[in-house]
Image 1 (cartoon, rainbow, N blue to C red):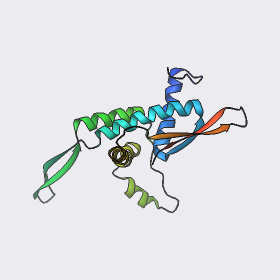
Image 2 (image 1 turned 90 degrees about the vertical axis):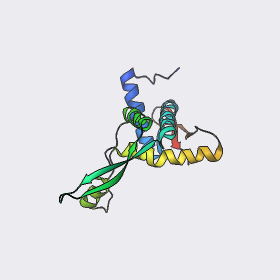
Image 3 (image 1 turned 180 degrees about the vertical axis):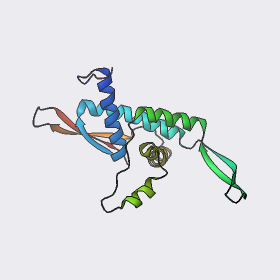
Image 4 (image 1 turned 120 degrees about the horizontal axis):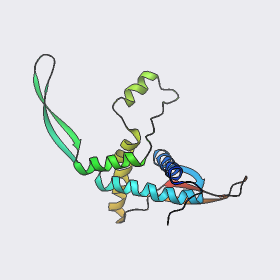
Length: 169
């Protein structure tokens, strides 16, 4: 039975969604133990969905006409139906975090780097995390277990048990 965390259902879902998004983006978050256990479950389901569907792509040949009227054939890689459905489910389950501009990066360089990416967190899940965990699944012969929880002890103010949730390498 899921924990209520002292919140109503909409607040609880928003909290878990936010923390799972930050966990997937940064790879590590610090929170209370009860929240950590809920976030772990939520994030692992998202990663499993991505691992199972990240390779489903379709290549299409498209005729493109340029400004001079010259026709050329271009190969376009699109998501397959299962990957598209998984992508949409994941977009519903996480909050879209935006790419952060580097400290020594100019505005033009930042715009050039992020021009083609509409949903950076979803792209990171499918392009970085899913292949990494799929290779781990092939190597170790086991799926799941993508996160780990470290218990830190009690928080100073209210003695709440604290924990760190991180993605396994």
